[in-house]
Image (cartoon, rainbow, N blue to C red):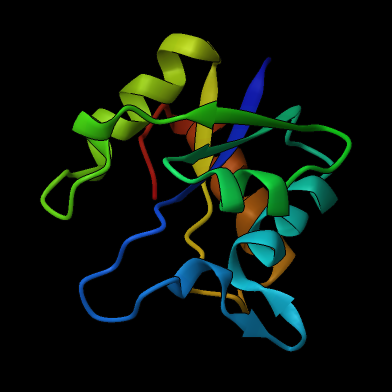
Length: 126
């Protein structure tokens, strides 16, 4: 079973500019999210979907793929589903799990449990 973990991170934010690059406990939010996925023993591949070269360079780690998001998928009004579809087009998988940068304190067991539930039930989870 191929499991892809993703982090979607735009540079723009209506409320807080550069939000995904702001430090949390000394580390940019986006990088913290990437590391959480890399630490998972069940995630096979980690992808960062971004419209920003700065975010892409921040996430250049072994085991991380950068997917440059087209402008049409980088607007404030763009829903997550089309972005996930874009990821899936470039990185087909059996299970896709997305880690949201806005929740930096998510316990590692939550990721593994979500993958387990999706695997057992075929349900889509976020």
